[in-house]
Length: 254
Image (cartoon, rainbow, N blue to C red; front, side):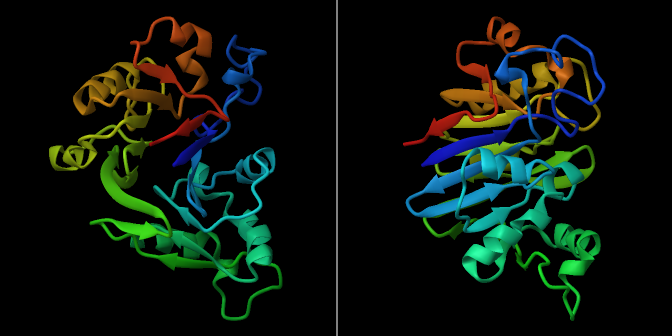
């Protein structure tokens, strides 16, 4: 299985508009962070988790010419506002694209992208079939998926386990029974917004503490803001089995 980190930034991305901090002015490509998303490939099956405002750029940068489905963690703008750009895949598929998410998220999509769900559609609107997540696990083609319930402050959202890999973004709380779903994973990608406390995201210390509990062989930090600091500075202080992820990082999972 191949995992591509399409974006590793927070809702504003890095650099932040009009910011002149050292991180936002950095010339290191690993400090340039689009909104968080991943692409999962196994055999002929290819899916994307989250389609934020940078979705078009991410697909072009990675020369993606085929997509089987979209998986959504939750309905915040930085995770869904690229959905209009699935139109190219609609044209290639000559039909709609499956979008997996929970009912609350579906309700929000029908409101935000109302033009895509009207009885009489304007030509060229995105075509998507909204499909309920099966909480106990399901598969899309050759990819097995286990949803993991986490909390983004008080908002229930989903992370996902794919075999020995897990992706957890936009959260600061997870119950013990959901942690059990992560037993035995090899590789973890987990959010770490910044070094100081935040109301709805894990900070660096909280993320490192949770990594110890889950005990993967390797962990990568994602959904990082410019307040986290530069990639190379983080590399110097993180534990040996933890690294800051960066846009374009490819992970091969056995």
